[in-house]
Image (cartoon, rainbow, N blue to C red; front, side):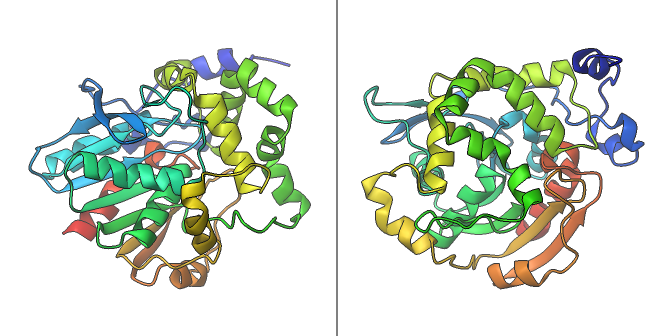
Length: 333
């Protein structure tokens, strides 16, 4: 079989994200680490103690960067420096179930439907006294940003949507799709079984590392890079949060009563009306994005631009932080 995955990845080395775009596909390496990672701060909301990192001047306009599954704040390491240097207050929170973020009530069910994650974003802004923010996210983080912008457009000055519109209909069971689409979502069907729950509990790092590699097939993640994020997935609520998220979206688990009306509204797939730029990774393991912008234009009524980003997989901010920072700075100029 040749080299093991671990041995193979050790040969990759680490390069800066600026060099990734021009590197041959066979030797691309994802992500960079900022020189000075600040201590994690904790802010208290009604539901969570949210862990977050902060960069830049405290009086700068706030930019909130939201990671997805199965990643953490390290995906934004290449973007925080340029944004801070441009004068922005950059906030990078750990989502519920990740890293130092904890539920305040030890007895409350660990739920993570899309409306809850979006509410966490607004709760974070409220706890920090932020009247308005700019949002950028991918995967779960992009979904939270889309919903926050839909429900609270007065609080969101602008949004960078990495992956486009990602609001889900969690009210009506979906229909089976083409075989290639169903195959790409194997992990979701897996997590909807008890075998999948046990597998994620016992083999979470193997599963996550496999997803990193298959969702960004043109990139190599070194052991050191994975090890910087790995502790985030040892959060005691991680498994319950992930399992609930993927079961709720497929109408196989109830959500929180407080979000019933919100989820009904989201099931209608309302548009995002704040100024937005959509970024889509050209080398996404879920398939190359369409060159047709009409779908994004329908979903984002104030779309400023739509860009297919070469040299980026699913973990777009780690691969092309320059594309993310350029989009944010353009929207906030």
